Length: 421
Ligand code: ASP
Ligand code: MG
Image (cartoon, rainbow, N blue to C red; front, side):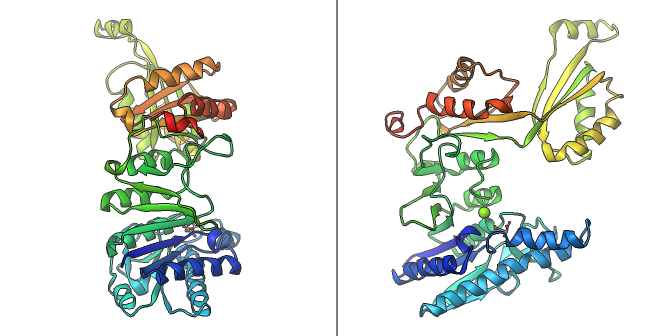
């Protein structure tokens, strides 16, 4: 008898019909002899609706009260799910975060889970009932209701699966799995059968928003197999698991992210401490930086050590578009100090990335990526790499072209994929 955790997202809970459908899937898993715990999200659109209500009252709602408000979406959903299971003749019991006791820190609107007390769940399961848990919410030491950040019920589900030692955590959603790239812009995108946690993290953080990033980190840490699948079909989706369980392919997927902006400080003094100064100011304003480029000329270094006036350099970096206001504040403080002559902002960029575990052992992926972009006349504005990823910054107008060209160039589409292993 297996222990199965199932999570239904907002779309899967979007109407009474859909809740009934989700309840039927849960009952089917239970009827197969499994112990079943279901985590639910609020009905689609509900969290947005609740948050807007508060913002209609004031532009600066209190974070503690925002969580008390937002958590009601999942309270409604969990009760309805239990009622839907009862209506189909089966036994179920719902628990809220504080009833089960999902203990979090007190960082309202983005709390982190510290501990899970699964004893009531274990008892209820032992009594033969299906357990329904409200996702997205927890409780802090002081008894305040907290929420885990947008998309947080994925993390609730994985955390509960880890605490219970579940055999699988099934994430039911409105897509049938994780794709080699965004099917909306690349018609030959193909569903991936199995993917490693590491690759999934890169794809998720690069804008393939199927799972909350934190849930993937947690699944990796505790070794929880995560099965992403459609709530509207019975075919298998994508299994996110350890790389040891995977057949090695060099490139697994192409991701793109339009959420970043490029900032260039022109003519900064080229001497020790200057870059530290800039990025310390950014950090003090709570800005996370992604790509960084500094052009240092050999001649310039020689000049500087000869004690001359000192040469200048350009420092370029990317940040989340949402952080631009804070970047401007930081630069206002530090720009003059480091001698920046000019600051240029460009929001018209996209980061396109090639991701795959096989890059660790195969040379030439970056070269191939650059060549494909060049062949399509796409200029690269910045590059960054990690062990399993190469990212290039290009103009937004090239998004579709770049993604399709790379997807085809790395033979990720349809039937070709079978021969590219
Ligand atoms: N209902 C929450 C949200 O919309 C949590 C979730 O759906 O995972 O962000
Ligand atoms: Mg979600």
